[in-house]
Image (cartoon, rainbow, N blue to C red; front, side, top):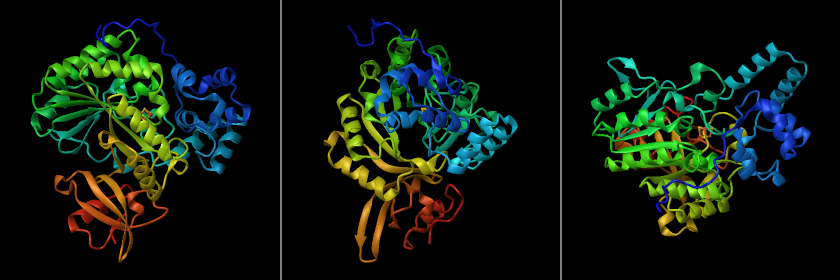
Length: 446
Ligand code: SF4
């Protein structure tokens, strides 16, 4: 029997839990009152959503609050400044709704909700008009944000797109349908890859997903359909027992049969997400369609800032037939002070894990910063006659002429993003110019 043939297992109904269900979650899983209070307070500002699968199969309740998956999905103490947390708690206790609303929006605005100018930059145009729900940064790839795919099965506390989950319609990226996308693609034959992203496109029904994908398949120049998703980690039943799970596998097969590459860009933050029976079955079924699963995640303190975690994760991925692809540096948004890992430590973690891998898993690259000019990878630290330096490289760039080009920056123990680095004065001018406009607009070259 084919792995994608009908799957004999009881369906599990999807139910999400938000801030209003915290008491129920706490009672069921024995969350201590002080932790419950903290989660309740911080979730006024940061989005919170989990589901039954995450609660029962991923969180290790015996290890709470230090459990990495608990830190991954539950907003908690330390993610906001102490004074902010105290203010939220006071306003909440006093039932001062107006004061709470004002404080929440002020605190959110201070969390840099749009890193790397993602709302203003990279928006493509067609006949002089901006195209909603699309970004075109790298020549070969267009990002497409289908309107119905802008939530997730659960929310990550470190999500760099957290702002779109907190209810402000202006903050959401959303394309109502694929018409403008396909018109744009026909005029830009250099675009070979469409990356559907969100939120999580796999939150959509298969019928809806099909309505976005099939028109893309009618554009001959598109060779790869990518779907960015954390559904295998957060809701693997999407590919096993959901009522349209088999249909989604048929859709993937259809993409492959059209001669395209179907790439599932899977987000795994911790090896535990790969080790459940449901996730294994989901991955086997996806792979049996001919789709290729590429794995990526940011390196975040409290969740996966340990080389053993990455060794295990990349080895597990290889064993499951997946492709380890990227370790990202956490973006400068949301509760970044809580999650950030200095670049010096990030490169140590990456290299310590990378060295342990068999050659076939060394497909992974990182630690990589998705910055305004492109993806900048920290390749290592070098001791030179003129001092210690980070070796950096543009792994991807808005300007293709920069791709693959190495450069250096003075070593720093504390820098955790590109704009905190002092770029070497000998760096070629075109790289310096590209780097000059970083996330916060500050010049980085000395
Ligand atoms: S699954 Fe992705 S988009 Fe959704 S909350 Fe997590 S990081 Fe953000």
